[in-house]
Image (tube, rainbow, N blue to C red):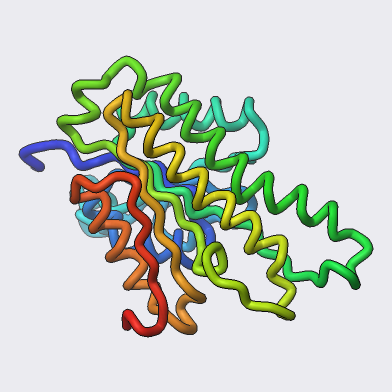
Length: 242
């Protein structure tokens, strides 16, 4: 038996590359509420259970490493509130929120007749949705536990992009970059305002992974920020850091 409870991580984008890698690497370290919209993370979840056919009642350690999958539309306020309620009902607390969900659709500003629709969608997913989730967690749990939040070093890690601080022209990234830049600046404001609740907020700005920077490097950065005491910090991960 564990001497103390594991930290509870509410992870968005759990079905994506980073989310799946996080679940696989940390399922035995954190209690992970893996939030996904349409693609279930390719990891053991509460819907799967391994057993020994020769001893069906024997507890297997593999079952302790499953994640708690929650399907949700983070662009819908009711869905977000339901998600937070479900996570709190299961774990009684939330120590870490990792906002890894993202919408990236490349399009030229001049050649796409639907560019404004793409912009609305990407800003909704990349900026408004993580803000909504953070404020709902604050409202439903963190606001009543300031001293505990500080003691437990509770925090938010926002996954933005190196595209938020560097311009890559003629790649169709204008809207994506703008949304990630907004998310990066929002993270700075969140750090200042969530501090009153004892909540730290940091951001990670990786270049393309796993093509230019390894997914493991991004995971290391998340763990570093969670285990540390920094707030208002942005970790930039580029190819030179490898």
